[in-house]
Length: 125
Image (cartoon, rainbow, N blue to C red; front, top):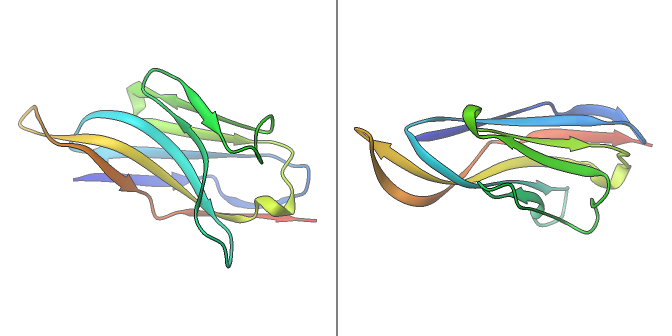
């Protein structure tokens, strides 16, 4: 079983910054892609940013130039640095990974999709 725990959400004024973290733990063999999604009230969940195991990244157009995704493979952790926040960034932010679990050192459940429970980011105007 793989668990994802997000942290770093909170209330910030427009123009401010926050850094989200998501640590994966459990029976992990390898983590392929890691990403951040968000869901604002009344809206569908959307991709914010993603990063592959090799470090390739992609971003939603709405956050390009303001948000930076990074990962520490040794710590199985992904980060989202969010700068120049505006009220439209208010949402619950979810961490997501594509992970292969392990049992007794061998890979099982290749490329499964795991999600964290989310962390709330509120940007006041």
